[in-house]
Length: 71
Image 1: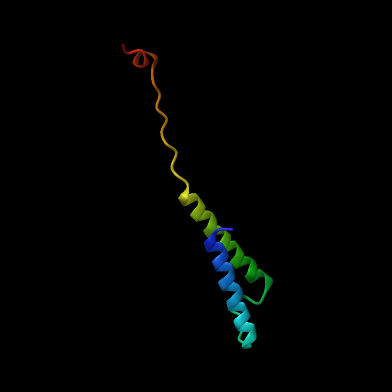
Image 2: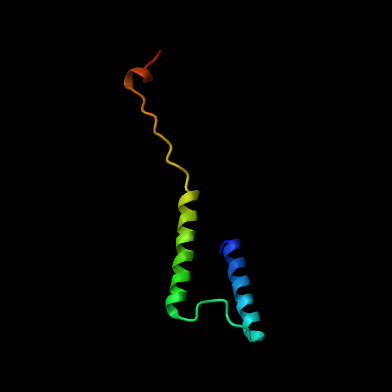
């Protein structure tokens, strides 16, 4: 598991644990639709980062037969 993902999950878990321990309102949507929205936003952000990190396709060099036979 990547380090950033593990750290993010740990912080989120601890934040929820502290909120429950001190009887604070949870910093998350109380309904399933809101939770699905947060999950969709997170997955969209992660997909965008993945697409941005992919290197651009390098142009292929075409060599003609006459250029390859230079003596």
